[in-house]
Length: 172
Image (cartoon, rainbow, N blue to C red; front, side, top):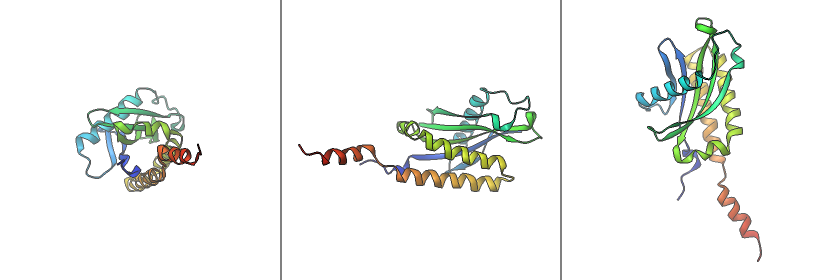
């Protein structure tokens, strides 16, 4: 029996490059172990930050992009959105940040099949994070993202079931 679609999303992590380096600020589930959180924060920010130079005071809106990253040690794949949060206290007037949605390795086709929708809702959440003034506001934003993703995955129809219904309507 196949698993319910609501179980596809395994974790969500908001990471920020702060004074301590890549730091997982908000994560779900709350019982995620620290080494996993740190691995996700370090890999997503380090790899994606290397693709761009923003210290020359480029607008924070100009630098944002998605990447699908494997986390073989965790047996997960992550869809990561890299963006900047305006902050004049930091070099380049911005903090690098990522929102990462994680799924099991064997479910990675989910990202490709649903990329258009996932990009829209993750970008929307990141835009809200850019405007948030507190960690509490960001917690609400990430929780709303989680709820939206879980609702979306619960509404996904299994394409094999849909095809089976169509095929069964044919008369031979």
